[in-house]
Every structure is written in C-alpha cells, then in structure tokens.
Length: 431
Image (cartoon, rainbow, N blue to C red; front, side, top):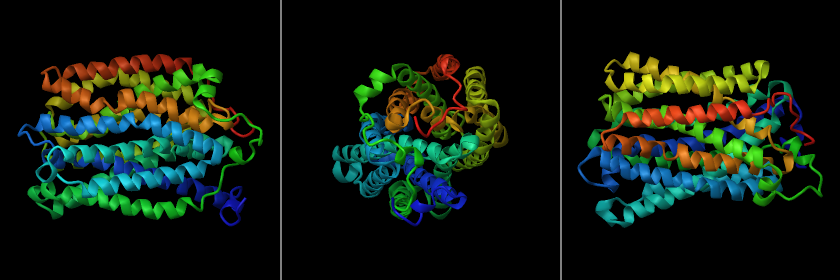
C-alpha cells in the first residue's frame, strides 16, 4: 500500500479527504453530462436545423439517449476493472473518458460546417461520455459506501448525489453567467462550446486528486484467491439482486430525469417560461434538492433504507400526474419552484441512498460490477429515454401520456422496493 493519503485511510481526516475526493469527480462527470442537456436548447439548431424547436430538441434528445445506451458497456468494462484492480483505479479511468468526450463536444463542427458528419461527431462524443458515466456511477457508489463508517453509511454515501446535483448546478450557473454575458445569438453560434471546454479543464484537476485517493478496506481485505468478477458470475450467483437493481434503477432514473434534466425544457417548451427564467427556477430548486441529500441519508441510517425508498416510489406515483398538469399551465416562477421542489423532495428518498442500497446487496469481489451494470441497464432503458419519450408524446399531441408513464413506472418500482431486503445493518467489509 502506498503511504501518504493511502496510509491515513483509517483516520477521520483521511476518510474525509477520500469522501471529498471520490465524490469530486462525480461533480465533474455530471457537470459535463448535464451541460449537454442544459445547453441543448442553444446548440440543437446548429446540429439539427429544421425551424421547429420540438423537432430540433428531438434530435439532441435522441443522441442524449444513445449516450445512456453506452452506459452498460462502460459499467461492464469498468465494473470488472474496479473489482479486479481497485475502486480508485476505476474512478480515474472514467474521468479520463469524460475529459475526452467533453473536449470533442467543445470542438465539434456544426451542420453548416460538416453536414451530416456534425451529428455523427456529436454522437461519438456522447458515446465517450456514456462510457464514462457508466463506469463512474458504480465506482463512485462502491467507493463512498465502502469508505464510510457503518453507523453513518447513509449520510456519507448521500454525498454522491450532493456532488452529482452540484455538477448540474455548476452547469446551470455557467448557463446563467453566459446568458448574462452573451446575447442569444452568440450563445447559439459559439457560446454553447464554452461549458464543455470548462468541463475538460475541471476533469484534469480532479484527475490529480483521484490519483492520491486511499483504497478502501473492503477491497484491500479481499483474498487473493477470490472469485473473478464477471457478468456470468454476477447473473449466476445474484440473479434476484441483479433484477431488483435493474427495476429500481429504471424507476429511479426515469423519475430523476423527468424531474431534473427534462423539467427545464418542459418549463420552456410547455409552460412558456423564458429560457433564463426556467434556468433560474431550476437552479433554485436544485440547490434545495442538493442540500436535502445528507438529511435524507442520515434519516435512512435511523429508520432504514426501505421506508425512504417507499416514500419516493409511492409519493412519486401519486404526485407526478397532478404536478405536471399544474406546471403545464403555470406562469408564476414561485409556484413552479414550489411544485418542482416538492417532486424533488420525494425523489430524495431514493437518490440519497441510491448507490448505497445497491452496494449493500453484493459481496466485495463483485460489488462494483453488481452496482454498475444492472443500474446502467435500467437507467439506459428508462432514464436515458425520458426526454425523448416526453418530447415524442408532446409532438403527437398527447403530452399527458408521459405523466402517466412516469407514474405507472413508479408504481412498479415501489413493488421492487417492497421486495428489497433491509440492508442498513449489513456489513461491507469481509463479504
């Protein structure tokens, strides 16, 4: 084992540095990933010029969804890599891929420059980012869960979504700053490239931090003759856990992207808010959402994981349809903020412990893959397609069908939550 930070992994300062360092990369990863969603309003006409906003956004939403379908591949490759070579090794590799994808978006030629090659290059960049995030989620969730103390695992593991939401907020703050400094025409012409260049630079800084992270005790304590991590072994030894993670990731991912990334477009495209007003509303709501994560994580350490999950599943099932109907006709930013924040508080019951509950289901030798791969499948099928499904329903004049779709999926997910074992007291070291 290396000295320095690694040698201090068991101390409180060492553990705190590891938690902060391990989650800092998640912030950069999700800043880059969310920047695509936040700035698609501006660059969609540059890659898919048609004169119709919904059609242009459908093009960028389709590429957004393809990025999600690369996640299972990234989860497979880097999940096995993290189980075999260490948690921090997987964290570092995912960050390198994200940096490359962001740089490619920043310099991608538009349709006017390269014709049909322009969306193809954008697609390649999103594929790199999808690979990266596919590996990042499992590596980060596993690392933070194993690094936390047993008594406060929910609290510490919640920082995965604190930094994830922080990445979204950073993208929105950049959007607000650019909106104040540049005109709409400048943002659409070239200003949308700036956030992706910023993301690449941030990734380089976090890369240096992640190389100094301590390895987790759960990984270093594994025996040399442990079973090899593989998809066939994951399915053979843990089929029930595999399927449960797929289902809860499907509903949780759909709810997350419906309430966060798609919501900004919904406020513009359906509610009729100006783009800067929609960004301000979402920024305020996401600040509250981010600060709520440790609170919900700490509550799960006291009452258990299942009550928090059912709070989200059943609450979201009931509230989604009336909340979206309300937002579709609202013109008051304060009322919009209140409705969205209400949905996000329900969602916090899931996101605060999302990665943790999956990590607590699997033994150490296959934990990274067990968290990452089934999550990536469920999230790709339902989370990654959320925007496309919503915009497709709107383009067909049946927008409310999307509200029902989310509610029905949350009902199914609530059943999966009910079937989950309570994992609050499960051990992560020595399994």
